[in-house]
Image (cartoon, rainbow, N blue to C red):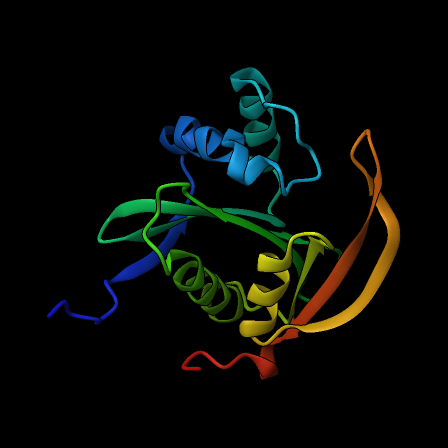
Length: 173
């Protein structure tokens, strides 16, 4: 009978050596189709983004690992003062089932305990039902819908906005 005990996971800062792996994840069709920017990103474009981000103390690029194996990417972008940040995330396309939930829990724990954030905000394209359910399962509240907010060169899509306050976070739920 397989052991259902979760494997040890943690969040660590992204380093330059992670760049190509994160780019490969980001450019995978199963990830890219749910992004605002859906073109295939070049290594040069990715390196410029990484270097710009490194110089901004309000941007946090993180790697999610299980048993020291990188399985996902998370970013927190603090917007102004007061500990409010937008987050973005994706798991490796070949990550084991359940890795996304583990990533979400580890990332939010990091956000509220290490980064001392007051609120984490998320957005999901309205057709990304998995992301909407994911946010809700982690305790996020839907705070609004931006109608026809994103144009993908073919059609407009609504964007669902979510928020989770630090005092609402249930690390053991």
